[in-house]
Length: 334
Ligand code: FES
Ligand SMILES: [Fe+2]
Image (cartoon, rainbow, N blue to C red; front, side):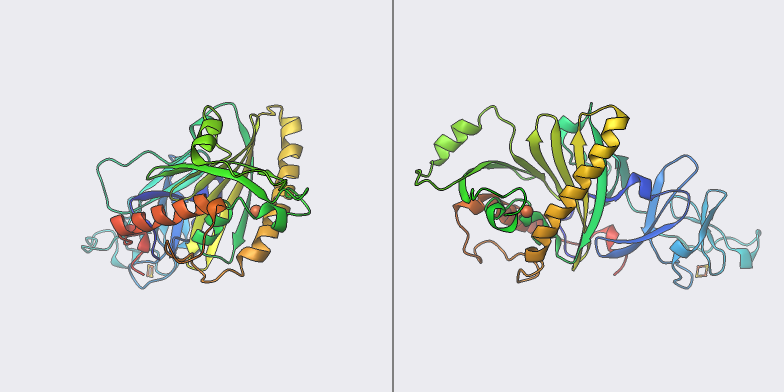
């Protein structure tokens, strides 16, 4: 699958990986995840180097991943450490090993490095304001769309009065004030307000910039795929966009809040999860109809001023694809 390389991708929630092999498709490859007794997660292509059986159908025994077919055993680094049919005395043949993917675990996610092997990896792309004092609840949904369409939909500030007419876009506020957009190689920040069209003049970029100064952005996106919506100082919506394959994207949708009492927090998270899913379904009905399936390169659609964030996403995404190429260890040989 073609993706920006040399990036950390959030691929699973931490709680999805335990002491049982977990087979899952991510970034266009079939992968198997598991944990050793020290708690560390491991990931490999879900294919035994012996005769190609799926390792996710196997088990974990004595801290080894055991293939269900002929019982070959692999350690966390992917080294084959036992071949039952050969007995204990025979040497493990050269090259009998699984590629081991580079992972990190933080913020309740497992992050997969897609790109070249390095001595030093960049920091995980996350949002500093979420580091302390927040609780969150997560729901996961899979959409039959390419990740570029999924992400652009959440940078689109002109669709609310139409797609979400019955929910968050009520009141006919179709006029887009801005957006003002700041971006660098990894970040897109968006300041925007929606209003009723009362014939007001369009504000210039300098004026929008002055209005944004000192305020948190309404939306903040970080490549390759996390997004934050500032609803209030105590409430934020978050999405991790996880490419499953060319045709499918998973959303890990989180509400971050500061209701620290668990008795109040759980029902609140459940309610927000339900309403966010409902709102997201309104988007889905339209996004699945967009053509082409993958968002086109810069310059091909007829964008308007309100699409500034989408335009930035397209240019940055195109330059990331170009700069880093698309191959990586997570290809799993596919
Ligand atoms: S296919 Fe895995 S041990 Fe034979
Ligand atoms: Fe939407």
